[in-house]
Length: 447
Image 1 (spheres, rainbow, N blue to C red):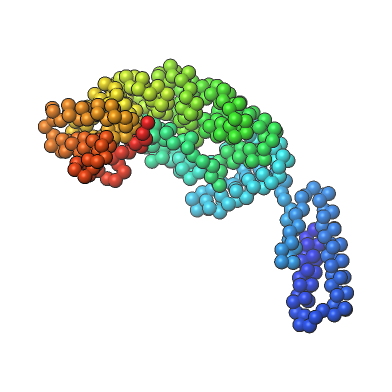
Image 2 (spheres, rainbow, N blue to C red):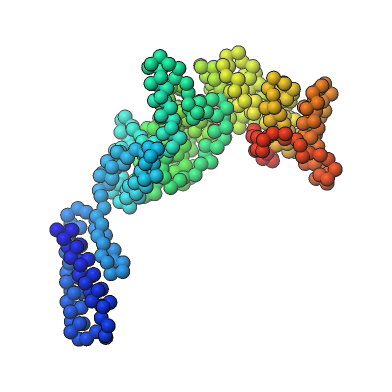
């Protein structure tokens, strides 16, 4: 019935518009009479359309250029059921994500009527999720391929993404950036999208749902996401609960077999929260988690300790870098970067710098540590201490290439202290490396 009425409305309006447009002369009285009749019929049909609201669907009538369109919204329960079936792939990702965004907007437009099905989904006993992020989908593919290889007795070598996030190097540098991420148009997963919907609708019921999810979730990414949403709603009211949840989840050592990228990065998000709130109450436990049972460095732990303890973390990390239980030399890069942040102010840091930069077995990569001499703490005393370190290394050096690098770095420091010397000192060939690689480990932020 609704469809028939809509067609009639469109036909009548179209006929009226055509009649008016095709009239070459001023409208006569008879024409006015016919127009009035058309208007009466359209008004009657519109009234019948509005009456369909009582049958359960919300009807929106939009008039544009004298064409009437009628759209009926799907119930929130039906939208959520549709969302459960949408899974993006390589070939259909763009089209699929448009559908996801469309459904999320539909839930938001439904207002508080969407809360019951969303609450039921988010708080179910055995939570499920659909990850939309391309890296997450690639991670899942890598895990499936590795499992299939192992089942055949082959080497299930880690893929590019899983290998990076599971390395001490990857987790350390990733931890520095996690909480800087901003909300994107497309949600990263179904559950995160629904959390956004709840927050966008707002009100006390929304806050209650988010708080309940926080109390129940076991995923670090969700704890971090909820922290941001609840902070916008209630300021720091949930700070203690956030930290309590983070501590509880971090006390459990991971088994290293996470099948989801979001679960793999869970600890990194939780430690990033501790860094955000400058929470040092977890330090004693974190000290025991620097090296995993598999002999790998947990970069998230290293980032937490160096961020919260500062220079006090150096002796502990310096001792760990020579730990015989370490199984991956690349993991030492995370420990090394944390130690080298304090070159010029800490004896262990200075000692490690000298060990690395004079180690010819490392090849050109050893010169990366030179970036630590011109970044970080750029106070005059620290920079002078670094110049003294350079001179002490050059005194015992018989490496011409290293000496040139050190001299160029020394000149660069001198120009930082006295910019008027820029025209007389040569500091242009300090890098000797691909652009951007020289200061990879040092953003150069001044204190």
